[in-house]
Image (cartoon, rainbow, N blue to C red):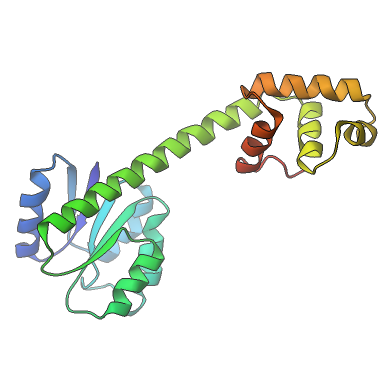
Length: 202
């Protein structure tokens, strides 16, 4: 897993390096929080370990704005100096994996890194599945897409046939072709795929 550590305190950096070296992660180090946030969107997905008290970061808006800036692409673990419960709650609601007040407990941070890695793997799997589904939907003809969308609106084959100026038998043939092209056993499964891929909108 790629880990981006954004921390300017040498003592904290040293303890983090000792911890991360034992895990075999690919680690990149940053000292400037604002500069890192500006480039975070172009970095490969990974886990960000970010000190919310870095100079240049607005701690009042950090938990809502800064974490949300990163979580679309990365997982985020927040480190903080003295704070209150509201700060931790705000960070977690914004999508952080966890929130630690310094000094952190080694075992707890390791657990958070494990959870971050699991989340990243789930994201990657969903992305691969979405790409595969889009490729499969690209095999459908415009007529097959029309039949699929009509069925997604709850219309029977007979109603869909009338609406599309087709015979019921032709609609059934299209439905059968859709199943083969999407590699699913039932039309209900095809509709679930189409809904998740936002294909049902005309």
